Length: 123
Image (cartoon, rainbow, N blue to C red; front, side, top):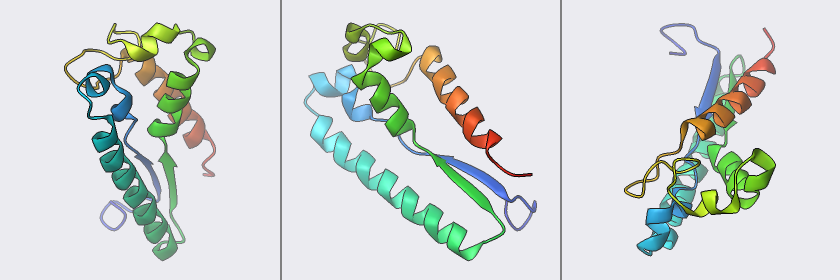
């Protein structure tokens, strides 16, 4: 996109804390999932730094869905959720017990944060 479409503003989104999803916790895979998520997110940051170091005319943001969702799971009341919502797949935060999909409400929160980050980009 940088070369072909002359794009200069980018936003990358890291992986949320799926290791905290009810089904992952219940099955005992939290530590395993946490390692892979951390590895991916760390590599994403390195790749983002490398890209910006080589393209001084580009803006690149990494929106941390991991930080945002972790904040929500640690302090659900702050965001209008109950503590049980952080630990149950009741479609308030987590959609189902079979995976770690997040709800529409959480997607809205991420969208608001993304909109704020994009509003900081100079034209």
